[in-house]
Length: 415
Image 1: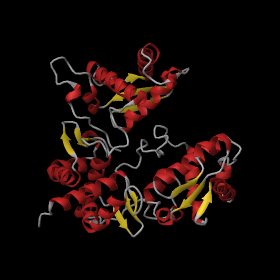
Image 2: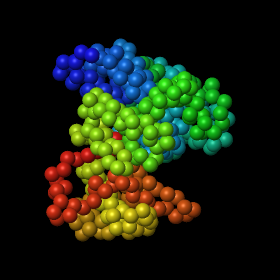
Image 3: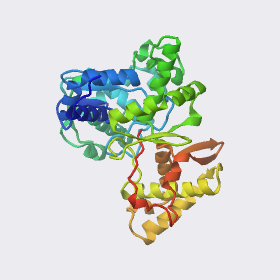
Image 4: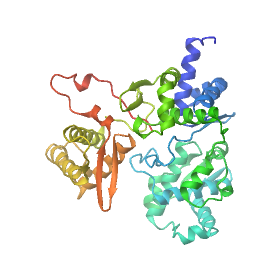
């Protein structure tokens, strides 16, 4: 096969990285250059993605859309999050409002205000007995309702469906003042990523319905089964911070052992990610740090505390291998860090000094660490325990004769 010239290789790599980071790209706006590269190299991108991941890439004159399916459908760490409140995952109400907003926008004209959007959503909800039975409240006078709708609108702006013309979501939440948006219909039409409509699925449980919506038909043959395994492994290496070998099914482990060099090599060549192969698993590290939605280390109070808790859990894993860490221990350590850095040190923001902050911040930090596959939380009746996972050892405090932490490149987990 003819080797591409350096400029072509650069454009293809940047186009692929952009799609992995932001699966929907509009032709105009801050990513217009990347969109042009995606369109120019569409055939190569579609071929690589189809062969290695099974993901579909659709490109037209208005938008490029990569339809991604995660390797693990039951991964609860991938909750939606808008750019303004990225450390606060969507609540159940936010998800319901996002779906209702998409349905209402389909019926709207070229522009809409957030007030009219809420009224359209209320009419749609009234037509659905299940929503009424679930007690979904849609009342503009309730601040939590306005906040949930504002977060849904912010997410729709992040992905290019809405463009704010006038107003501000923060003022809407506080006072109810209106916000005006333009609707980008090509992006709106490309949002849903399922291979079949939910209304065509007869299954009743959430897990079965989700699996049916994204089901990918492949031949039930050795070749088809191998392709399915290859897609699942490549998706995990591209999207997940770490692929742990003990979590793989026997056929997946056998395939990875025989094809590891080929799979890892193709990913590294196409994306620029750097493979880290350990006894416990594989991580494709991004030394530039722009393919992640969560980084460690990060600046700010929460970023600093996350690193401190990771160091604490790494030490616990070293001193008590295989033993869980109680939530009480984590909260106690968080309280000590608040005392050192927020009370006496005065370096953290005021939220760390609020009542019960050690419990609230511990929960947020553990959610982040679980998303980065550094820990696993186990719920045993009313008790929560934390299981440190092998990758957390990279955040252990260095011994005096070890390489200084500052000289190591910052490695970031990708979701």
